Image (cartoon, rainbow, N blue to C red; front, side, top):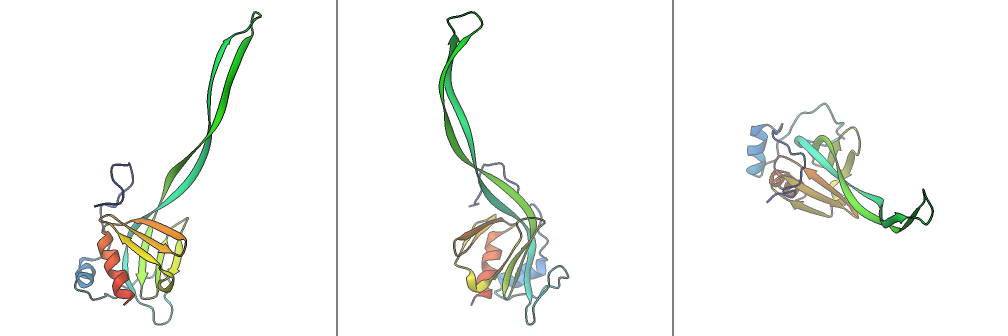
Length: 160
């Protein structure tokens, strides 16, 4: 089941992860993927690269006015009564980027809201068919990916 159902959310139709790399991952072997887009530390190897979309939850507030209006006692005047109630709601903004997983880090490369997290701080992983939710302490990252089970499998292999 997908994380994001009937809502109008972006989805990723094509994966950029090579089929040979997917086959290696599903056989519980980590591939070594060459990339010039991230700086790898000494002894670090990239084992996953694919398109991803980060969901950013933004809390919004607006006023909702409920009231009545009636003609006043004098010509050209009106009588108004009512109250304004603050209404809170949440919007989801989405940021497209590239997700990299190395033997040491998870990196989301994007123009905004990018992150770079070490595996040792990863608290939990929740895979879905079209997404993965990563928790680092109190911070949660919802990422739409082509296949959440592949990302989950890579993270399990990296953290064995």
